[in-house]
Image 1 (cartoon, protein in one colour):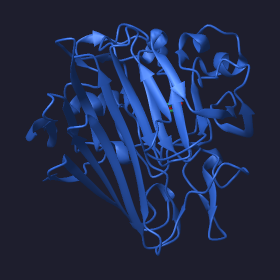
Image 2 (spheres, rainbow, N blue to C red):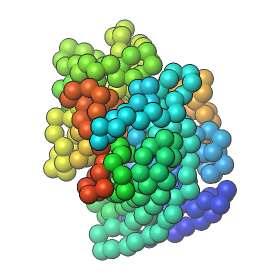
Image 3 (cartoon, helix red, strand yellow):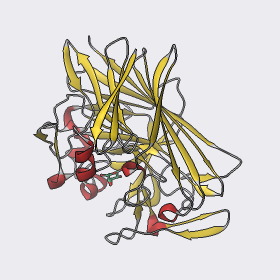
Length: 346
Ligand code: GAL
């Protein structure tokens, strides 16, 4: 196992972590993000996540690609929340009146402090960021840590930790997008998807949750039997048409590290990613960037050219019954883990 580092431009660092099976995970302190995940499949190298070649491109094109998202992933309706009986109003996006992904230019655009660590089992990069009290309107000085590890079991492990000095809310995620063909000119419609979820959260035209939790049975959002993603894109099901694909929280039937909660598999079944998490929800987003689809690594990406599996507590937490709680208190530090395990044909 080996860690190397190089300049990624704009005073940022790109770390490359390679395990004994030749898998390389590249991560940057710009937004504590994953930039590359390079695996060799049937003898050929393939980058199976979306990403850009330089920090400059991330700054110009953003779209949260591979970034750590916080303080709160997803939409906070009208930018309002209550914690410890106190009401807060965050700045909102004037276009839709909500606060997305912790507010404009948040965790994803920060320069995180970083250090590396190597043990027998894993090689890691540990990113830390101190978000001051009132940053983007959130109370509390928040110390956030995100550790990315690569193991010889071909796992990319994300460990989150945080502390606060005042009651606040916290709900981070990672915004990795997979395209297991390594070819961003192809949509992910021929990938297959398994999600161990009986219910999803219904969204409105602005992609905010409405408070309704719907049974997936007899809908194109039923992925309990590992089916092609095409089943969503091809239907007239209103929840698909309204947001042009998946941009929905799925409520996981189980959590933990015994069995995967989600699996994405390439069209030829030569690579798959198993997702394990202790979070109750995965928000699945199918990169419907339309005309805003960026050029990446020298090629223009197609709309639906990636799929993000964002583990978190559902947006709507603290507002709607059954959506969970994202309060964070000084005496109860935050810990969470998500694992993406790579399986492939050699
Ligand atoms: C997703 C969100 C999408 C979109 C995207 C960023 O997590 O649900 O609606 O905003 O992030 O491009």
